[in-house]
Amino acid sequence: MCGIIGYCGHRPAVPLVVEGLRRLEYRGYDSAGVSFVQGGRLSVIRAEGKLSGLEKKLESQHVFSATSGMGHTRWATHGPPVEKNAHPHLDHSGRLAIIHNGIIENYQEIKTELAQKGVEFRSDTDSEVLVNLIAHCLKDTGGDVTRAISKALSRVEGAYAIVVMSVDHPGTLWATRVASPLVMGVGTGENFFGSDIPAFLPYTRDVVFLEDGELVRITASSWEVMETASLKPVEKKVNHINWDVQAAEKGGHKHFMLKEIFEQPKVIRDCLLGRISQQGGQVRLPELDELPVPERLHIVACGTSYHAGLWGMYLLEKYAGIPVQVEIASEFRYRDPILPKNGVVLAISQSGETMDTMAGIKLAKGRGLPVIGLCNVVGSSISREADYVVYSQAGPEISVASTKAMCSQLAALLLLTLYWGRRSGRMAEDDCARMLRELQAMPQMLEEALPGLRAKAQRLARHYAEATSFLYLGRGPSYPLALEGALKLKEISYIHAEGYAAGEMKHGPIALIDPHFPTFAIALDDEFFPKVKSNLVEVQARAGEILALTNEGLDLAVEQPWTLPRASGPLAAFVILPAVQLFAYEMADYLGKDVDQPRNLAKSVTVE
Ligand code: M6R
Image (cartoon, rainbow, N blue to C red; front, side, top):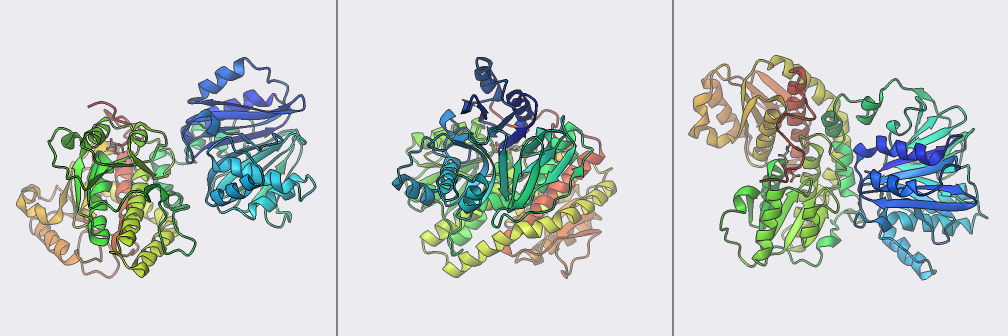
């Protein structure tokens, strides 16, 4: 999830672009860069690390005469976060520059083809391939950039928002998108592109929301939108928005946590990008192809990532036939764990910086076990320490309480299960293809369900606002989600909550049940339902009130049923997860808590 800004107008472009990048920093960054045409030359200036690195470099340059320019903060997806991979990227002739947010799935095949034609690449990125493809198409379009972009994109698969600049047209920028955010700001004598509205909010509140497959050309005084494929003009409405900068960063949501919960459909799509074969029946994880299918797996993680790992255990054992042990990293590192030589360690971490997880990796490596890192942050310490890395592709998570990162970890764990299940022959091709189809359908199902889930969570939060304790219950793969629901509630609302395996409740926690101690149960239409139902009857016999996530048509009489859309088997997790997150969010918000920065917590825990 990168930050993009483009500008054509009458002001000095470079300082404006850098200032816009600063407002986009919440989208994550590991490097930044700008490009502009000055003195007949297309210049690119880039720096690794935070934006201040780029600003420092710019101090020594005379960059104030250009009145068009573009800039980018990178959140790495291809290649490590080093300067050569920072954007903008030039084509090999240096006449075109591109900034890009997204992933080009078929970049490798295009790269090979262009390399055979003599193109030399300087970075590891898919974006550099794309700018060279556009440059290549310019030969067939007689130098017409608009047509060259259209032609190049007809060959491209994947998700992208790009802005293109040409040395031959210094006052013009082009932009287009598919499945990556891009908006246009319409000013007076100036026009803008941004991956998000905050990029240009101090200059204009008039915004054109661009749709997938639309291509835009702007100059200081004009803008035109067309279909990327046919170049037919498209009529667009200019919207006036009233957001302030802070609201704009949150995409109009009150908190980052809420924004991130609502991003989960996109997170699943991004996690699947490039990882499902063209025919749809196979998972592609080339980063693991050289590693034999593990005979045993030790999952090591903390907090929410640990819950994701527990959920993964149910799937990996059932569908891939791999024996799995899930370990809390802070315990694992100080035990003397038995780690058989045929084992593999899977370390799960959103930040990739959690010290306990890192220590677990070192222990495993010291014993000679291969380590796979399942991380969100590219180039993070864990991703560098691990022998193999699978990125979960959730984009930057700002809210301290982890939400969308867990969704991406679940999607990645499901992919890993199918990938190993097929490779070991344990899973039938048809079953794998069916689960993949269901996973691919999940984003749309969630998009439709999320507003209703939120409305229900809001009503329930008002109902339970006085509660001081909750018991969360689940069985099978829903048990880790009960743990996660309890963790989310504790973290942000400061209400005590315990997650328990539903069948274990009778061995102790049942003593707590009374009319003032509500139970939050996960009782969906699956093989565990009859057992969960009897556990809930035990709660009701002690006058405990029950809020239950359930499905239409189930024979379950509880005080607060919360009906979820049906999803088959383990896929139900993708619906349960936002429900427990939204309940915690609405409780915390209703109680006036600091949702995004709860007391005593840090986003990445780099201490013991
Ligand atoms: O970055 P990591 O996934 O390694 O972080 C692990 C935990 O610190 C993290 O999940 C923590 O529990 C969050 N506060 C959960 O919302």
